[in-house]
Image (cartoon, rainbow, N blue to C red; front, top):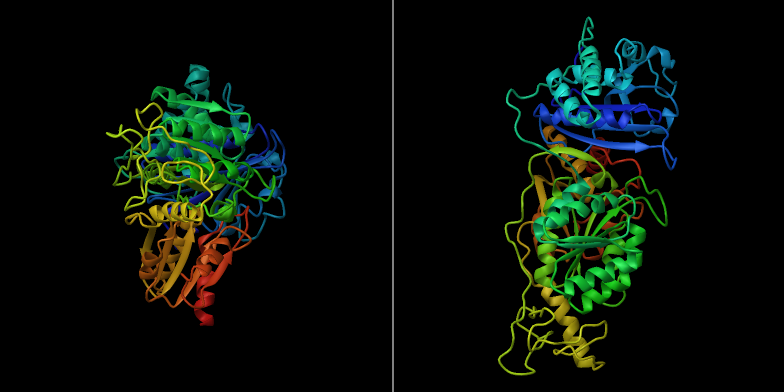
Length: 581
């Protein structure tokens, strides 16, 4: 039987489900590690029920011989350890005619919500087979079966088992390897799924989450102090940085709340140390007054905001791109600052590193937007690129003349040297009040206007190079997007072009300030465009439309979370618009 995903024979999608304690996530993590060991690419997202702890869970993976940045439209394989509350994941694990369900007969029949005459069912006695091995576990039997169907070599699974369970002792490793081998050696008269073909010589790949990649970008950029308050789905940033910053001579402090966090990093940055905080939507709301202080005092800092479903507590464990408006407009007064968004898991490293550089050189706030689907998902990727330019903060030196230092001097490029506390002759007042060039508080109209212009022009006039966006493809059709929706948009554009509908895709990385002339040049010749984003209010669409940066007739495809945007949905929207035109 041929592989079900005939349009994309170089990828396969698999989901693993089961109740709490069945080892769903462990199996998924080990499978992803085996993907890397075999030299393939992969992406794993996870989902859980509404319980605070425990309960049913699902691991969703897409594997391929090329980079994988998003889930596919449908899943080729569903491995179910049991059926407890599995219907909660029906919308998240869409199957298609020819998809395969692997089930343990002892767990009962396939639920009617998943059963279909077009769906293949493979009976695998996971529990019975596990009992034949001392210390055997059904999830490892299932892992071996799944790996065989996907085309992963047994050696890669055995290697992963040895590494994953090393701390549990030799007996646990041997039992797990035996289970994997037993599952992998199961025979069928005909493989129900056409497997992938791993390369003969596996290259070096990274196995990393978006949150971990953001951490990597932060330390590469020079961040050495972090203050933050734990919040889902950004807490892993703190967990990774806490031990690793110390190895680089830095430190992390868990603050009592988000207000304390932002004020701590303002103080640290004022002292000369590049600083960062990590949060999600509710925490970003609390930080706004402090961020305004950083803007007006021209103190550089970075906020990594890992978005989740909102408003209020919303859906903490699910993804949504709904914090764009607060990132752009949440400050009171006129407060120019930077807003950036990573386009995929690996790009979290590049974008965060670039944000640190930009924040430092422009002496302002940089908000980096990722989301739960990026932050907590894991991916097998090539080592991510680094920004071409490593910008640094402009520091003041002791002036030759007494009382000559002007912290907020009106220079040609609107950037004025920032002194480190203790620099002789460079004392100045740094607070939230408007000020003159020396930093002395002032309510004069002229001082206010000059400093407003200074803070705006230094950002608007900076040359951001070509990293402002990613562009793929060409044609009169265009998909405009940002953040985690980029993967689906790029794949949709590629599929459309292959089908004879020339389509380009533009993913914005720098959302503020908008690179208006560059975007206008990029969109020349576009007659049919859609803006794709995962929120209910079409936030990017309205933002670009207000700035007159969309081709006439551009339509919005705004889909709120928690379900991901899939390439097929984008294709349907684009072709519908093309037909209507």
